[in-house]
Image (cartoon, rainbow, N blue to C red; front, side, top):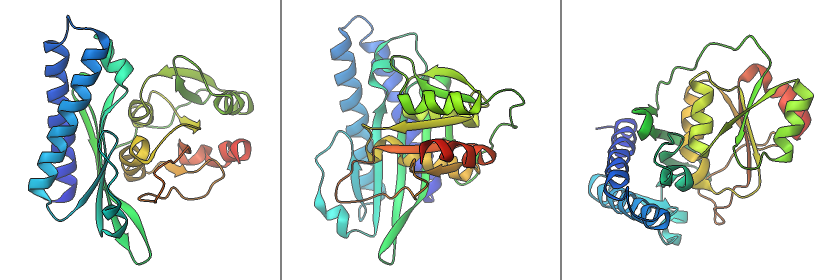
Length: 246
């Protein structure tokens, strides 16, 4: 299978495993459920990638960062469980599995494939072709964390005359733009490459705008995997959003 198909298959199957963990650990503590989910999904993804793409490097949130990836031509960037808090709450659907592939191109590189599985929604969004929902006629909807909306998102809401939509994981937030539930996702602080690589790959395939909050490109497979800020939005809103964030 090609890289797009593999990314979709692995994200979906890891999601199925996580649903099994949820059922198996339904009566366990929240911490036990989180730990089991992280481990089972990570172990599955690492084993499958080692078998299916043995020459590729892997950067996983749950694994040790092997510097060999910095010399590799192809690097899989995965988040085995994006939104552990939401996963641990048995009635929530806003958590995800991220699987993305970065490929070197000369001195730099680019995301070339990706998939975001939303297991509790029985949905996987994957490259190369992703349909984005039709433009929203009402005020722009800015998707934010349900616990503490960041100041930059509130500034975008105020500048655009928008409304807030609360949601959990980063993958679910980006997916909400393609699902027609939101129009803008802006984040500043506290993220890493695995938080956004797969969502950004899928968003780009859907024709959405993706960048840093200053408008510069999102770069992956860097020595420091911290990638603290990003903007994902409908292309017609990009100029207005960046006027606030940049």
